[in-house]
Length: 278
Image (cartoon, rainbow, N blue to C red):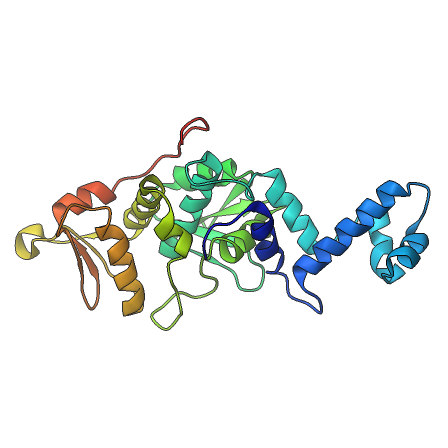
């Protein structure tokens, strides 16, 4: 999936809502009703139903302040600046951090669309919290007192499922289990983004998933060994190689291996840019 204009993103976002009608059509219908009501402030839902040929039972709640779920989601995205954020913007880079985290150490629930971001003792919890707050959401910690399970940083409050839908529907993050049988691919926008965005994404991934190995024995300092398809492993290795010193990344049958020069470049906790940095 490549990046697009705000309206195209809104359409992809709204279409994560399944039902008897297309999610974006529901948004457009709601917008039509709002426009009609603005032009006829003294008329009610019955008049709107007749004029627009939309069942009254569908639009009556909208006259009382309710709105369709896809419209609510698009409003969240507009409010927090997700639809128009571009690579290099602080909001977009925060979204890309969370996107990378889903791939490397998180998940998006298939039913609720709420994302979770696992944080082990050595993981940069503050980065996850900062990224979530940058995209406009509060945070909560789950399992912090459970020694046998990783702590999870989660978005809290209104909009938490909207974030998961945006990461999946617009930015192409995987949803549900991630293993070698799952069809997980890197999105097109990541390959086309500027080097600074790709480097930030890669650093999140390597910081979370990289495991040190014996450099003296293997000549490599870090490995990324996961249950992923070879196709994904190769695409990920190519992404690393495009940013790393020459011949410092090897894609094996079971892992991606990094020589010390690549490990020093990628095993770094990234920061988010300021708003005036592009």
